Image (cartoon, rainbow, N blue to C red):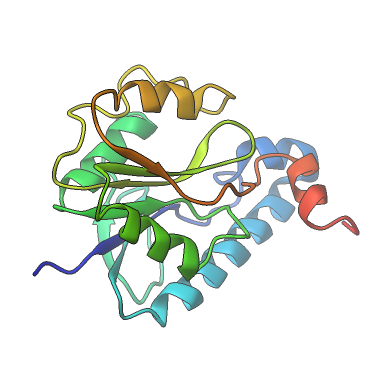
Length: 189
């Protein structure tokens, strides 16, 4: 039996290179602090897990990132090409972003359970995108082809690419792309 793989998809924490939409509103340093904090939290949570193996798919490919996980390069291409490449390395895998404060082991476990009966699983984000995608062996050939990224149509576009496949959804969460997203999670900020 192959162990399930969790792919933590992240950008190396560099000032001015992470959370650019958020940085335009709160400043590059605050955006970097948020990114580093979320990445550290998610690493702590997933490091304790034994139900799956976690790997870090990082960009830029050669950037130094301290991590307890085996590292994979994301490679070139748009977001969809890089995610498809990472997921394509494994028979059954779940990929998550690092900017979802509500994400924990429960959502990942639910995604792997869903892959027991579905070909693809998604964690919908409140803004119309998704924070989690999992693919099993009967995956769609090109799940991210023609997807409009960073908008309210992202998940809908991706689901269209999964036509004819069994798809499951896990709990809807809020990702943080803007200052309003951050305030919704932490009203005192």
